[in-house]
Length: 193
Image (tube, rainbow, N blue to C red; front, side, top):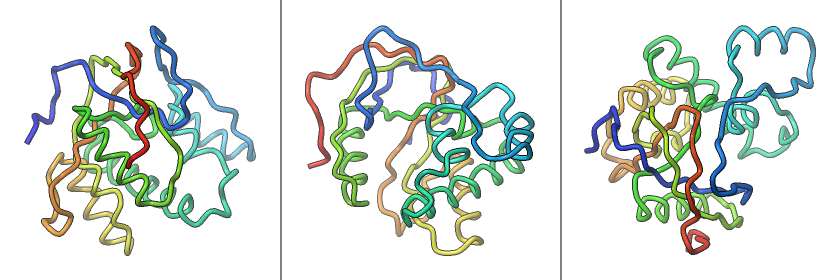
């Protein structure tokens, strides 16, 4: 099992939007909150320094509200964030993280998992660098059945544990705290085949 506090700064990021460019930096930003003043107040209170694209997609955008996979994923993200705030406030918020993996093999495993969930998008894989990161088992995010079960898995996720054996071997994901430097594209496009 990898160390939960990672000192090695180079990771691999699967860019499913195919939007990264070499020698750029991924930072937090202030999204446009499209709802009402209460939503803006919540954002300012909870994420005063901004969010990453992931946080924007799952905490503030409502454009995918009819997609059941999105609704399920958003519910999981909200539960995991609640548990983090209560049980592991020192861990980086998923809404304020850029995600990666430890190796190219893990990137391929991640893309297979994404494909199994129904996504047909291809992704480019990039070497990235971050000074602060937390490593945990991403498989714990994909097991929503009830709120109580999801909260239990969230506690294990934020503890950096392997989780229940029924999930098989862990797939370690890296939550990188911005700034995250984009180094170079790995020379192949991976489709999760």
